[in-house]
Length: 408
Ligand code: SF4
Ligand code: SF4
View 1 (cartoon, rainbow, N blue to C red):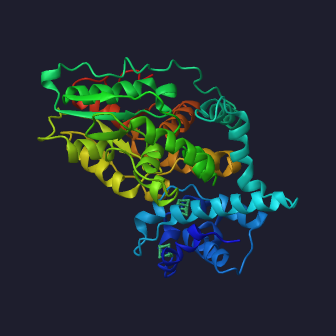
View 2: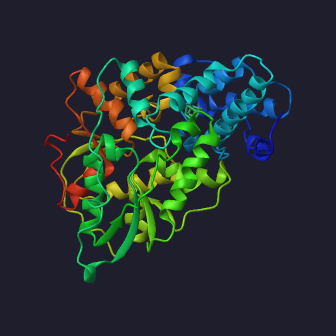
């Protein structure tokens, strides 16, 4: 029953020496207080599945669904255990096993299957499941999420730089932000143009696949990633830029590590990595005398370090640290759907930390986190702005809106 890809992570599971440091930072564990909810417990559970000591079951699916794949444990783990990848692979194993069990007419595992099935059935199209996602989030939160925002055409997304000034060419993957937060894609384009970088958004790009990967449906995710790989092929670009945390982890690492696909036609960067590592010359950021909280979105740990590094290069911008365990908004799409109440409790902890920080704005690189936070801050009468990293950069480069201006 156990597949080759799960066998291949045997060594990764063995890295965990059960020190328990992850207990201090895991938002789920801090709420439920049970060992199977923390990284150590989940890794042991997957180890037992791999060793054949446990069989796939509804109970196991429930336990493995209680992970935000936020990676906060990975930042703390002295053994570099890739907890999120282990959890995602195990979810995929359960979904795969479920397909086999269904074929044999035995009961499926609701905790894992519900969300993947919902996205498949309710999405306006498999390529852009955003309608289903927004509809579900609206049900969960009892509010109205932005819907039917205009699509930014590829014509708009072609940079406006004179050919003689072009320093670099990038392929831009705007992801679902182009629908729910057009202001973010505008900010990215503005930042690129301010640095003489020509951006194109190729025809044929689809959803990054993360909503399916998160729910263990690697088959659906793989098809989307292949479509995106194909869309970037044949373009004269130095790099591919992704401005959302979820898309970044799929396009940069998971397409190969978890889906076993061949790579993109150019190296993939998030906004911070691109500006720090690819752009020639020092950053010409202007002073931005504001106090912000930068929130860990569920991305790759190394990207988070680069994002903080980039923000510290903006003169007079004050970054306020909050406790690590409060750095997740509980807003993972899959997690919110399956564990709505727990998601809200985790969000509350983050909101309390934000209130204590007494900041002007909260910064993240995840449109999903932005939605969750905007809704939450507004409903509690809190005045902090929620901004994407690219919006802050646009302002620092003198091409964006003020941190104190209306950001919608
Ligand atoms: S911090 Fe890492 S090594 Fe320690 S118990 Fe957690 S996962 Fe295992
Ligand atoms: S990824 Fe996040 S929710 Fe999952 S075990 Fe690690 S800290 Fe906890």
